[in-house]
Amino acid sequence: MDIRNKVAIVTGGASGIGRSIAQRFAADGARAVVVADVNLERAEDVARDIKGLAVRCDVSQEADIQALVATTRQHYGQVDAYISNAGILGRLGGFELEDPLWDKMWQIHGMAHVWAARAVVPEMVARGEGFFMVTASAAGLLTIVESAPYAVTKHAAVAFAEWLRIAYGRKGLRVSCLCPQSVRTDMVPGDGGSASHDGIISPEVVAQEVVTTMQNEQFLVLPHPEVAQYFRNKGQDYERWIGGMQKMYARHAEAL
Image (cartoon, rainbow, N blue to C red; front, side, top):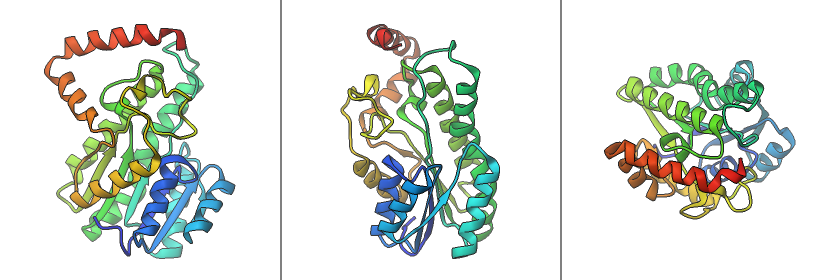
């Protein structure tokens, strides 16, 4: 899809990857960009710079997503592209982490994509055109040793994006899944942790890759191209891959 003259919603749009995608869409000629974020003040700053619309949205609440889409339709008539990008990191650790953190991760990294699809996909399919992107992570294709809830829920994000592409990809809906490793945002610690193995890239690099993937109508958005080979290695020799990840876990165990 070419973003020119299109209406796009970007959740988590007030900072990091979301902000860079919103800015890039505006620069590339989008008719309108709706910057959605739980932090309305920061969203308004971004929207002001790109002459877009800021909407407060907590994607862990389906009612907020429905209201976001309704507001966009009121202002611009329809939604052409939905970038389901909002995410959190939370405390590092494993199964011992508290249930409220797990629940929040499930809502933001899992159900938020489901709720967004409910809100926009039927309209897109009826028109025979639309774009839906899930921001997952390389952690969703591989794993991340520092955080069990992040790894598990990002796997769910990849799985839902896959299902959506399979179910609606021949009905006019373009679906992509963004899976970067470490990106220089507020969520990333100073050294980037295990995800920085292939370097920490800028959000602007990610936005460029999103635009390229949209135009090529590919499923996976891989700003770190090395991830494709890691994913192949995982599939070709799962036992060996798990052994390698156990070694990485041992190296990063002190962070947990």
